[in-house]
Length: 436
Ligand code: SF4
Ligand code: SF4
Figure 1 (tube, rainbow, N blue to C red):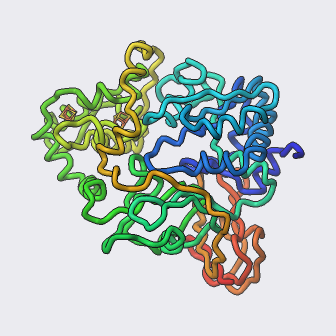
Figure 2: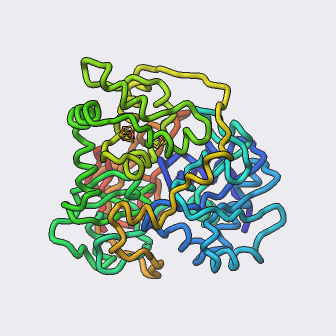
Figure 3: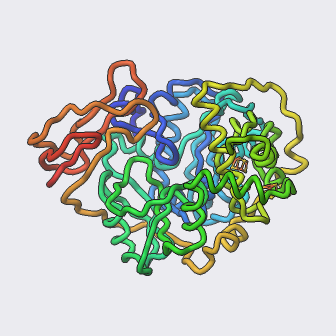
């Protein structure tokens, strides 16, 4: 496949498909020693990345090779769980020179960039920095696929799992509703379903299935509304209750800190201190600057705390406030040695699944060949890191699948958005609606 340029990647609207949606053309302008393909996929019940690697190994390897060329890396590494023997055996004979596989533990949060970079390079990204600080760039499986496909990003792959008739990984036009994609998994198997968008650990709760799939929607886990995970997310939305209960019930056992992957990397974050600080304050706020380095993995809340408290929420709320105040903390030194603790405190996925009450759901998500023939799509103008794109179409315009319908302003961080179906523009607001 021909080498893509950053300008082409920009024109195709490629963004990080596994997280916040950082524009790939910006990431690939950097120079790095190593580029790492993040195929760890450690969120319970999600299977998209492994399925894409199995279905399109040549394309993903090509996309990774092209990205490697752009960043000038001397080597490319595919980080994938060692338990996926069949995928690894499929990939190994296809690897070009300078590309290798690192087999990762079946634990959470193996896919966290800081943990992944440490596992692959044994380098610790300093607190508050990005992988580039240690000469690494990390990219996602679907992002590499989108580079290799060399065309506008109009489709999204995602796993639909949990309380559905048949968990699947599917390919759909960007902008279709959650209701439609859950339908492709045979529909919900419970009366009052909700969904965790993006994963059960780092996702968000949705009770509105008219919400749409964007370029970054990696999965939907459907659950009954009374499932304890769904209840946990609902309670977490009530900050005052979270802070009040945390201040009175935390016994300072520090289990949350002992499990925290960033603490184990030597970063100065200790969630039990954020919990303790709730008690110092008259206004129910935490105030601990180390929370700036929380990666929001939720392990402290979902796995560690024996009192069912929400130290993650407390850290994240504190982090957001500090960031909104423009607070920074430059920390050079790494105080602890991860090799002493990180490995023996990794949380096995099987144990996490049982702890979260997900053991009764099928843990699989085979890739469906067929896509969805959508009649209507709604494409939000912000599906990426940066400013929302500006619409370049108006109501009544006829568009073809792949046409540019919105783009960022000159010199602004953002990504181009394309029509994901052919049809007519019905609405332009903070999203563009197209009907076939
Ligand atoms: S969510 Fe909890 S465990 Fe995860 S990084 Fe933040 S404080 Fe640490
Ligand atoms: S694990 Fe729970 S009880 Fe223990 S210090 Fe952390 S928040 Fe408090």
